[in-house]
Length: 181
Image 1 (tube, rainbow, N blue to C red):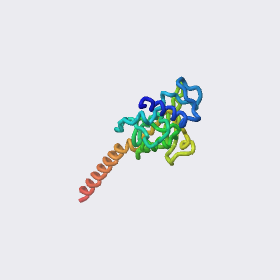
Image 2 (tube, one colour; image 1 turned 45 degrees about the horizontal axis):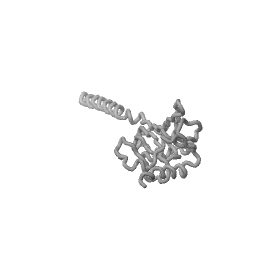
Image 3 (spheres, rainbow, N blue to C red; image 1 turned 90 degrees about the vertical axis):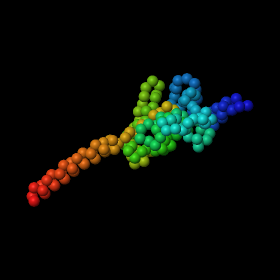
Image 4 (cartoon, one colour; image 1 turned 120 degrees about the vertical axis):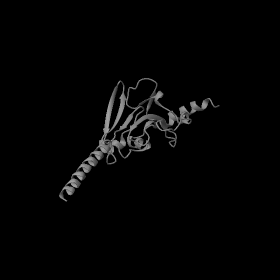
């Protein structure tokens, strides 16, 4: 009986979760196809560790096939996330913990493998995102990259530089005061 459970789960998910997608085992030939080896079922991930830098899955989504999406950069939990099929870009970003305070949201990139080539999409979600960003559907194997703002990267350098200039200016002013007495 236990042997048939994964097979029953597979059949149920294929019937319920993928009514509009064409499922096959070979190379994709249309944009609505899903390769079987890209799919993961929640029952397969029950023993998966939840450590930082690890693989994450969304346990509260029921009756959906999970697809692998890489979310990297300045987000709450970067790494490989197994998210429900049909999830949009903004929802995927939110499930990964959302952008960090030092994230550059003006140029978030999504890289998608199309056959033997890569296609890159860029979104400006600085003000919450537009209709295109909120309706962009993620596919298995997509990679979201949220860069870091250069202001925050260079903040330590500029702070040090301002401190040095202030010290030199203060020293010059004190020296002039001492010379005038």
